[in-house]
Image 1 (cartoon, rainbow, N blue to C red):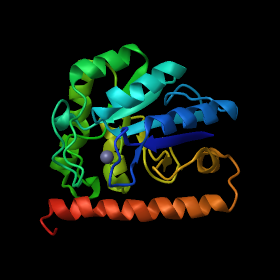
Image 2: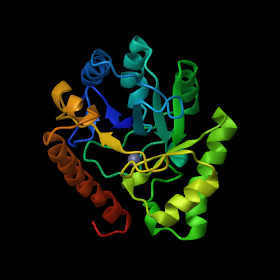
Image 3: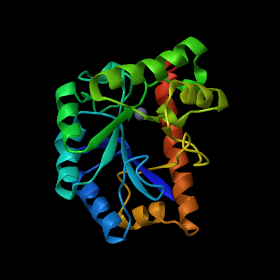
Image 4: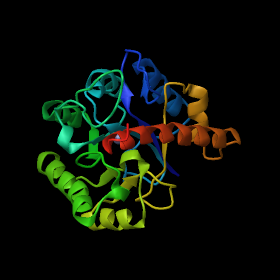
Length: 241
Ligand SMILES: [Zn+2]
């Protein structure tokens, strides 16, 4: 069974949001995965294993996640928001301030060590709210620019996990083979288990378990609640907040 873990920000400074982890936590989680006999793989390598993903491609990944990944020779996929490569974050609201994103130099260095990259679209918009032209731009243009710089790109992670059948049709047409987000019923809707600051090796084991106990459903509910609050970002875009 293919399972994906979704990380966002890795930093040693306390953040006023749920979607971040200390580097020591990432280290502990990777150790837990290996100690429990799982394989950490890249999409397309095998049908069975854990894919470690990082959404948004913030620069803190270079300073805090990359050294941990190197230590374990652990593969991972970083999903980049193409319009923000090398720039500060203007798409998210966060009281901890704007975060800079990875630049091409850092991306190339990480790639040399086996870190893979995928698209997190051009500008991190809710894909289900776009017209055809906007959707094609987010999907195809991000793939084109990433491929020009990094070679073949076949994975995408959906902003805010928002998809519908029309979005998936356009994702397939754009040539993506692996889509992260959804309920896990196809390669374009691979389920990602979000990892939060409150997670421990114990809750992580529940998330990656093949036969999850009842507690797992509590975990999924908790993820849904935290995702709900990310809608604040969407409302902010619309000028509601
Ligand atoms: Zn994102």
